[in-house]
Length: 213
Image (cartoon, rainbow, N blue to C red; front, side):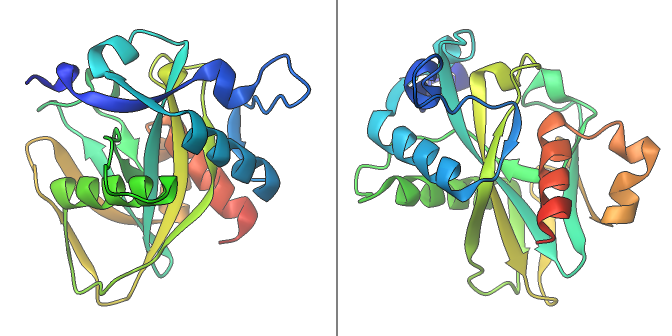
């Protein structure tokens, strides 16, 4: 089965955001208000379905929830640059602060959070080798929506922070596709880096700075 034939989790945009209703939660950028994040997560949990990825990528009537995890070790963040060896061609050469991917149905999961965490842990294991990290917790701190970008129009990010101990080490598995590097906030804010950050990474960095997390 090709990657575009994969069955992934999607949510109808209208059911997620409720645009035009008295419970409209549409936003652009990052949503961090706990009550709104909780309401949007409940809508995802109640309304998600599966769709062929190739169809979902071309249909902005649906949003694909993507767990987007920021890995932090002290004051440094793990970043990676997408090389030309595969993946989403629209993102080649860009620098990302988050690791994540499409979600598949998890039949034994009791809650949507389990579906989210199972998919995220699988994605982290596929893309990265994380050593000496123990069992770090996942903290969901908000949602990302970027309807101004072609990639963002069909996705919604679930922003998660994973704090790693000082002993943790990370390497990328597919070195022909990704190049990993630890950076602090000053390095990320440097113009030659900041202008190459993916839009979701800009939103994530802004959320982390303003929340002082």
